[in-house]
Length: 321
Picture (cartoon, rainbow, N blue to C red):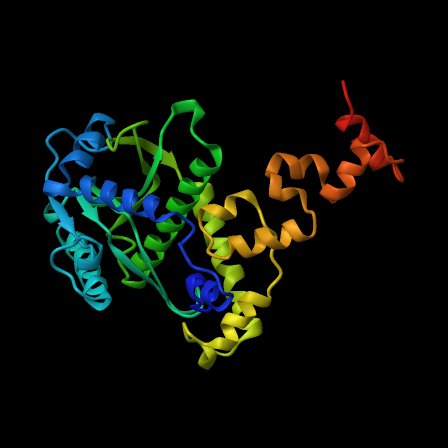
């Protein structure tokens, strides 16, 4: 919210940033996404049509990716922002010109929603014309496999939450352009995963994002309140050492999911390990042990006398059955 990048904070803490993923996972994700948009998004289109998200024989692909991200036309952020704005204005004025798949539209979140102004790149959107208006649906692309009812619930929830943020951001962007009456932002979205053991796309269409978008809106408001309370506008800078130190000094609560996205996760994991926090063994162990440290749990396992009803209950659960 203060334009502080976690990779810069990680470097300041003496860590090597990986953006929460291994280099191999990042490389595979980049290849997967590039493959989806190859030949005017042929693979993605086929998957979306199979799921009924796009009509058969849909057409049109607009690539708004930066060159550094696999695009061919746009070299700078300013160019991407302008191209996205022109796209929205064009389909609002003449829906018949809308391409059915748009890669990586970039949305500027107006100042006063997140401090400072923030940029979000939506993985993909689709556009269909309904009742004379273009309906834009956001999509989130993840490289993890879709295993049906056995898909990792944390990964699935994270993908839905990200799509909800994109949907809310797109609504804000359209409103800032005063196009709300002309462009319909769909309440649902689509998720793109991989088939297990392959890089073929597995699409989940018609994912209701209402709750996730409401959470995003509330989160944006909360971020604004916190940001306003602790810093002045002229303090904003991505490399401001004061802001980076504030991030490093902030209280943290390590969780297993942190490994998926946060460059500071190794530091927080080590802190939890140093204090004997059960979270280092995973969320299930934390739910069982609560605030009981690992050292104390071992003592109870070895027959130490419980000093409270909580420890007595825990000792019964940990004991032999």
